[in-house]
Length: 163
Image (cartoon, rainbow, N blue to C red):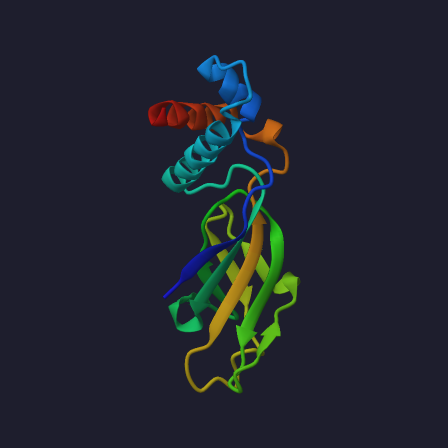
Protein backbone atom coordinates (compact mmCIF):
# COMPACT_ATOMS: atom_id res chain seq x y z
CA UNK A 1 0.00 0.00 0.00
CA UNK A 2 1.31 3.43 -0.94
CA UNK A 3 0.94 6.11 1.72
CA UNK A 4 1.47 9.85 1.41
CA UNK A 5 2.08 12.23 4.30
CA UNK A 6 2.85 15.93 4.33
CA UNK A 7 6.14 16.54 6.12
CA UNK A 8 6.24 20.33 5.97
CA UNK A 9 3.18 22.52 5.28
CA UNK A 10 3.41 25.64 3.11
CA UNK A 11 5.15 28.56 4.78
CA UNK A 12 3.15 31.09 2.74
CA UNK A 13 -0.41 31.07 1.48
CA UNK A 14 -1.25 31.63 -2.20
CA UNK A 15 -3.77 34.31 -1.21
CA UNK A 16 -2.56 36.83 1.37
CA UNK A 17 -4.57 37.69 4.46
CA UNK A 18 -4.90 41.27 3.19
CA UNK A 19 -6.53 40.01 -0.02
CA UNK A 20 -9.00 37.89 1.91
CA UNK A 21 -9.78 40.82 4.22
CA UNK A 22 -10.37 43.04 1.16
CA UNK A 23 -12.58 40.37 -0.40
CA UNK A 24 -14.76 40.46 2.74
CA UNK A 25 -14.56 44.25 2.89
CA UNK A 26 -13.18 44.02 6.44
CA UNK A 27 -10.97 46.98 7.33
CA UNK A 28 -9.97 45.95 10.88
CA UNK A 29 -7.67 43.21 12.14
CA UNK A 30 -9.94 41.83 14.87
CA UNK A 31 -11.00 38.83 12.75
CA UNK A 32 -7.57 38.05 11.26
CA UNK A 33 -7.25 34.70 13.06
CA UNK A 34 -10.55 33.43 11.68
CA UNK A 35 -9.92 34.85 8.20
CA UNK A 36 -6.45 33.22 8.06
CA UNK A 37 -7.82 29.88 9.28
CA UNK A 38 -10.56 29.89 6.65
CA UNK A 39 -7.99 30.89 4.02
CA UNK A 40 -5.81 27.88 4.93
CA UNK A 41 -8.85 25.60 4.81
CA UNK A 42 -9.76 26.97 1.37
CA UNK A 43 -6.21 26.36 0.12
CA UNK A 44 -6.26 22.80 1.52
CA UNK A 45 -9.54 22.10 -0.23
CA UNK A 46 -8.26 23.40 -3.58
CA UNK A 47 -5.12 21.25 -3.18
CA UNK A 48 -7.24 18.18 -2.43
CA UNK A 49 -9.58 18.84 -5.35
CA UNK A 50 -6.81 19.47 -7.88
CA UNK A 51 -4.19 17.06 -6.48
CA UNK A 52 -1.63 19.87 -6.80
CA UNK A 53 0.48 21.83 -4.36
CA UNK A 54 0.14 25.60 -4.61
CA UNK A 55 3.04 27.00 -2.56
CA UNK A 56 6.14 25.07 -1.52
CA UNK A 57 5.62 22.13 0.85
CA UNK A 58 7.33 18.79 1.49
CA UNK A 59 5.76 15.33 1.14
CA UNK A 60 6.81 11.76 1.92
CA UNK A 61 5.69 8.65 0.04
CA UNK A 62 6.11 5.19 1.54
CA UNK A 63 5.46 2.20 -0.70
CA UNK A 64 6.24 -1.46 -1.14
CA UNK A 65 8.67 -2.29 -3.95
CA UNK A 66 6.31 -5.05 -5.11
CA UNK A 67 3.75 -2.33 -5.91
CA UNK A 68 6.01 -0.42 -8.27
CA UNK A 69 5.80 -0.91 -12.02
CA UNK A 70 9.13 -2.49 -13.04
CA UNK A 71 11.03 -1.43 -16.13
CA UNK A 72 14.56 -2.79 -16.19
CA UNK A 73 16.48 -1.46 -13.22
CA UNK A 74 13.76 1.12 -12.50
CA UNK A 75 10.50 0.96 -10.56
CA UNK A 76 7.77 3.58 -10.97
CA UNK A 77 5.52 4.75 -8.14
CA UNK A 78 2.63 7.17 -8.49
CA UNK A 79 3.16 10.49 -6.74
CA UNK A 80 0.93 13.35 -5.70
CA UNK A 81 1.03 17.12 -5.47
CA UNK A 82 2.91 18.39 -8.55
CA UNK A 83 4.62 20.64 -9.61
CA UNK A 84 7.88 19.18 -8.30
CA UNK A 85 10.63 21.41 -6.99
CA UNK A 86 13.09 18.64 -6.23
CA UNK A 87 13.71 15.44 -4.37
CA UNK A 88 15.06 15.60 -0.82
CA UNK A 89 15.67 11.93 -0.07
CA UNK A 90 14.98 8.41 -1.29
CA UNK A 91 15.56 5.26 0.78
CA UNK A 92 15.11 1.54 0.28
CA UNK A 93 14.93 -0.99 3.11
CA UNK A 94 17.45 -3.77 3.48
CA UNK A 95 16.70 -7.32 4.63
CA UNK A 96 18.27 -6.64 8.04
CA UNK A 97 15.65 -3.95 8.80
CA UNK A 98 17.90 -0.97 8.15
CA UNK A 99 17.59 1.26 5.12
CA UNK A 100 20.02 2.76 2.68
CA UNK A 101 19.80 6.12 0.91
CA UNK A 102 19.53 6.00 -2.85
CA UNK A 103 21.64 8.57 -4.68
CA UNK A 104 19.31 11.31 -5.91
CA UNK A 105 20.73 10.64 -9.37
CA UNK A 106 18.73 7.38 -9.13
CA UNK A 107 15.46 9.34 -8.68
CA UNK A 108 13.46 11.10 -11.41
CA UNK A 109 9.89 11.89 -12.40
CA UNK A 110 8.24 10.94 -15.64
CA UNK A 111 7.49 13.57 -18.30
CA UNK A 112 4.16 14.66 -16.81
CA UNK A 113 5.34 14.46 -13.18
CA UNK A 114 2.74 11.86 -12.23
CA UNK A 115 5.21 9.18 -11.11
CA UNK A 116 8.64 8.85 -9.58
CA UNK A 117 11.11 6.41 -11.09
CA UNK A 118 13.66 4.84 -8.75
CA UNK A 119 16.72 3.09 -10.10
CA UNK A 120 16.97 0.10 -7.78
CA UNK A 121 19.57 -2.11 -9.46
CA UNK A 122 22.04 -3.29 -6.84
CA UNK A 123 19.56 -2.61 -4.05
CA UNK A 124 17.20 -5.53 -4.65
CA UNK A 125 19.65 -8.32 -5.42
CA UNK A 126 19.58 -9.78 -1.91
CA UNK A 127 15.89 -9.21 -1.22
CA UNK A 128 14.01 -12.29 -0.04
CA UNK A 129 10.64 -10.59 0.27
CA UNK A 130 8.98 -7.20 -0.19
CA UNK A 131 11.11 -4.13 0.30
CA UNK A 132 9.70 -0.77 1.45
CA UNK A 133 10.87 2.43 -0.20
CA UNK A 134 10.46 6.05 0.87
CA UNK A 135 10.74 9.20 -1.20
CA UNK A 136 10.68 12.76 0.15
CA UNK A 137 10.16 15.65 -2.26
CA UNK A 138 9.37 19.36 -2.32
CA UNK A 139 6.52 20.54 -4.49
CA UNK A 140 4.51 23.65 -5.30
CA UNK A 141 6.02 27.01 -6.22
CA UNK A 142 8.42 29.03 -4.09
CA UNK A 143 6.62 32.38 -4.19
CA UNK A 144 2.90 33.03 -3.76
CA UNK A 145 3.10 35.47 -6.68
CA UNK A 146 3.99 32.50 -8.94
CA UNK A 147 0.77 30.60 -8.19
CA UNK A 148 -1.34 30.70 -11.37
CA UNK A 149 -4.18 33.22 -11.13
CA UNK A 150 -6.79 30.54 -11.84
CA UNK A 151 -5.71 28.60 -8.72
CA UNK A 152 -5.57 31.75 -6.60
CA UNK A 153 -9.12 32.53 -7.77
CA UNK A 154 -10.17 28.98 -6.90
CA UNK A 155 -8.91 29.53 -3.35
CA UNK A 156 -10.89 32.78 -3.08
CA UNK A 157 -14.04 31.12 -4.45
CA UNK A 158 -13.64 28.18 -2.05
CA UNK A 159 -13.10 30.74 0.73
CA UNK A 160 -16.29 32.55 -0.27
CA UNK A 161 -18.22 29.27 -0.03
CA UNK A 162 -17.13 28.95 3.62
CA UNK A 163 -18.25 32.40 4.79
